[in-house]
Length: 367
Image (cartoon, rainbow, N blue to C red; front, side, top):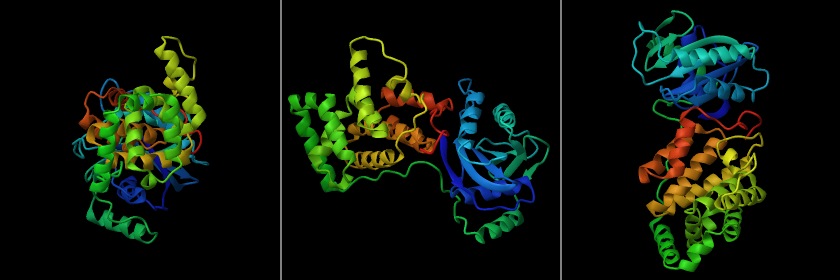
């Protein structure tokens, strides 16, 4: 699961291990179970990107992971070389061969086939590091760390990144009074059969969500928040809302047409919501809409009764994945599945992204 690209500070590395010391401060957090790729332009550090280290299972496709990384690298103009760093919790010693060699081989091969120079391919676990390309390995020393820290202090790199992890910012419960207001409005909807059915129709749901995405979340009244939460408890409406949030009203309408056809047992054309949901297609979502949608959904989760948090948490996961924020997507999925382990969309999506799959549009232009 990819993380957004960030520009790095210039680092003068005397040896490959220096990059492993510097990268956490360059990124602003400590990578965990991650693939970090440092790009170079004319022997100068350029941008860094981070991808979740996929599980070491037969289901993981190393070539798929490598293809995802090369697409992300294509977003950075002028890249001519890369350094690959695997950060893992897997225990190994400086005398051992670093773990995950087949995955790294696939990544190195893909980078080389794209004409990129390979500066090195490294592994880091705690204070132990090693190279996949030669026998150079060892442990970080305090003097090494002090030298690199001094260099980065001089260019204003982030400090105190030990323990700062990538991923979604935790969603705190909203004010008690607001939560009680949404809970009361939710109960009213559940006791009103006609309103429940109406909110599971696309036309009123579309109006509701279109108004919400154009409003500041804190200005939306409790009855409207409860209606938003109830509407996406219907999986058809939920999926159409995702398309609306990412691409606009027209995309939501197209998804509604496909959903209606599926419910009638009809076949659907190529390029439908089914393919878009798994990341097929080249049209990037609207980045500003996604930012607004994430703010709205986080606000909903902060005020929702726990069973009603499942849909917005899973929607948050998809939107983060759609814009290349894989770690945040994983965090939201974990929260959703802790509430409802059997929630189908969260389970299917977790299976999808655990293979290293990223949307086709990620890396084709900025999301």
